[in-house]
Image (cartoon, rainbow, N blue to C red):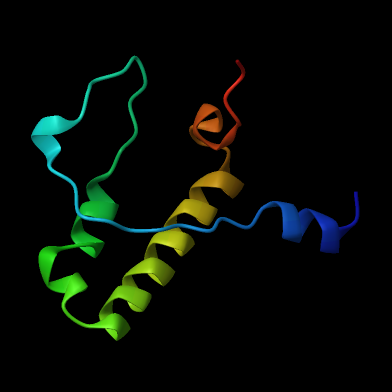
Length: 80
């Protein structure tokens, strides 16, 4: 695979939304969210420019994690 095709396939398109942590169900997988929790907060959703900046930061962090090879299961499609 060429470098251009590899770069296209390794892009991540994130979205952010407000959730209640008490409604999340635990799974057998663990994913460190400490860096992402600091990036996204309630104040992020007040202005569109702040939301776009937060999305860019989340995208950067997830792409770094993908390229480093950590949590490979997180970036694979579900098999049903």
